[in-house]
Length: 307
Ligand code: FAD
Image (tube, rainbow, N blue to C red; front, top):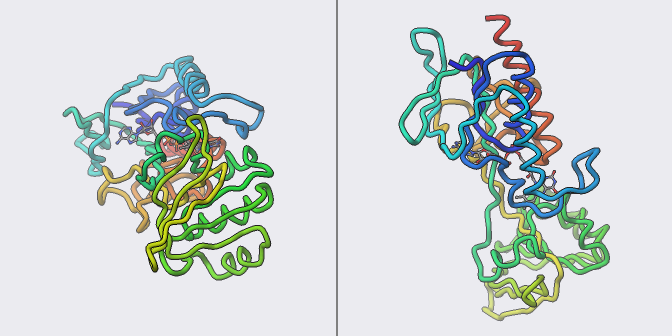
């Protein structure tokens, strides 16, 4: 069995594996797609101490760093079940989709998350060419330009407030007939002179010139009229879905599916830790995920030396 079995090969899983391996304990890492969301990223300019890099390059650096250590890398494999009932030797299990069950004295869950998409024409074609999911990451690219934010929940309204300080103009588009965000955020966004809020509107298409976004169309859900909006950026904020479906009832998750962790990265199951975008951590960022991954691994090590 592994001393630490890490599930997920994004920034959180990679950091956990490096920290565990540096303790000289047997470390395994299972990942469906090593690099995780960073593989889908263009420029990364907020990983502290690296002023600029690109997603695929970051993912390759991450893999090289993990391979500097004695980590058993098992890629292109999906975890299908977490077995929290210890076996005769007291080990936890992770059953892979392909059949075998790997054993670990501790497990670190780091399966990340995925953004919910609008599923409209043009969205995929202009992903990273104006269509984006992360205001903290890509906001500065749209300095002085008009943008739209899709989604009027807390993330969408926070994004609109954030972007109002950078973009020339922000249009916030919400499908329902009212915003779902907290009252204090709604008051704030409505007080901003360069933000328009459009309610009861369904985004129907992302428009572009072949290389970048030039606008979008939306349909009014009240009178069916169709409007064109000229924007350079579209921030889609309609939900971040944690990749935790496979965990079923094995560990405690919130109603949004985020694994509940404490400040040390511990879940409600002894020996099972978690880190990164699949957890209740409030900010979904690379630098946050790597910190959380190292925290989870150090906590797993602490658990090992006490048991
Ligand atoms: P992920 O990166 O999601 O990695 C999850 C890992 O788990 C992957 O290896 C995946 O294959 C694996 N996995 C999932 N399910 C299973 C399973 N069942 N079995 C086995 N393996 C599984 N953040 C920034 O800080 N700066 C940026 O500029 C930035 N830009 C972004 C741009 C885009 C387009 C996107 C989508 C995100 C961006 N982010 C950015 C956010 C950042 O990428 C995430 O916060 C970070 O990758 C989270 O790391 P993670 O390790 O928790 O999860």
